[in-house]
Image (cartoon, rainbow, N blue to C red; front, side):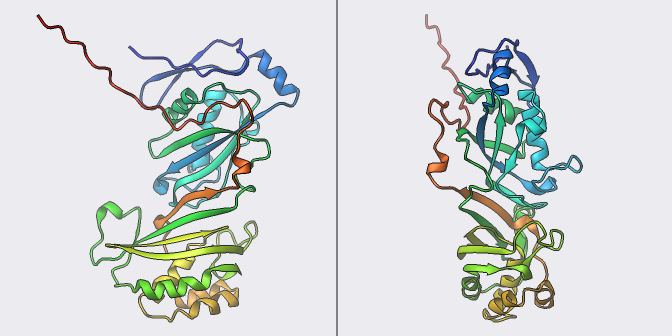
Length: 324
């Protein structure tokens, strides 16, 4: 027999529960706010919610909303709209970073708003993950203060870029790491990476699709670490942004085809053509958005908020055996 989980609101809704069929075939009874909640929304009272999201970006056209081909934001909005019965404009879903096609995430952050509140987030959390495809998962949901904004409140982000550095590519890494059959020198790569640290105009490394008309080329890199882990060379970058075309230049340095001192020269040129002369593009599927960092104060939930939901664990009850 299927169990029904009820999502509870701060004000008891007058509307009846509605069953939502989930991806895994189970059912959750999800309640929508009634007239009392509509009155509070009309008075200008809204609640903001923060989500931490992980996804395998292989099948998606990046984060930013577009109905076809599908994006991460598109799937999240459809799930939220189905549960809350709100439209896109009411939800105002915003992500911390607009990851590109094929880029993965372990700690993407997004926020959305509702004109009603929840007493418990666990059932809501289960419902949204049940409506999402298996390669997208909401890892955490919590209440957020009104001043919190997933994108503009960001202090820094941490990215990983993985390079599989063996003669034969491991098929289990095909969609998750760039394959370099040339033996790379991680020490030379680290020396080159150090030149990226600081505040720079990274126009030379901009993606041609965006042409930097929306995204500023001025970025601050706090650290850029190159670590060898068996067959994997991992680049870990913390800063206000990361352009994975930087990886292409580091790979050329790692092959010892270019000196580490080429990096400041390419940065100073502020011209993508200069980078194209010495390095090809690196594929996006080796890139991961690992986490987004905020000031502790901005992450404090409002007073009276429900506990943070990290997902519900299931336990199998022990069978009682009869002995004669």
